[in-house]
Amino acid sequence: MATPEPQAQAPALRWALPVGAAATAVALRLRDPHVSGSWGFCPWKWLVGLDCPGCGGLRAVNDLTHGDVLAAVSSNLLVVLLAPVAIALWLLWVHRTRTGLPMPTVPGWVWGGGLVGLAIFTVLRNLPAGAWLAS
Image 1 (tube, rainbow, N blue to C red):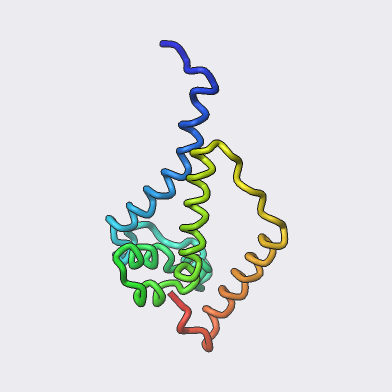
Image 2 (cartoon, rainbow, N blue to C red):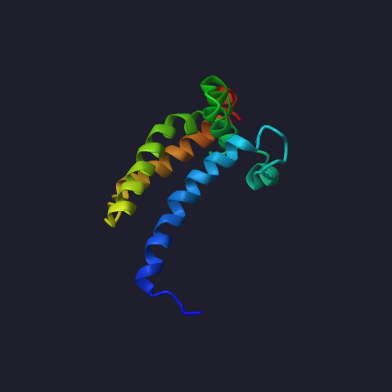
């Protein structure tokens, strides 16, 4: 059997990640992460006993795919706030993959600001005053 030429493999490989991301959202809709252990356990919460910034994120995505925004907010407010951004970036990703254009480079200050925001969210959700942010 002949091996496909590298150019023939590239389009399929380019589509693997955006399709995989969409498949993950579909899987979260179909398999309920509200059932304890159905998607495994958060290693950070298991080791340290505190919520990481992603704790409750799978439940939040499941709730959003079912149209239950309030339950999603209760699971992970950050996921709910970032869902529109994630959808817009996914659509850009699909468009860029379809047209063969590379994704734009993200400036360092955006990555730095995002890390600072994650750290602040993580600390707040683990303090008594931020208990309403806990998963």
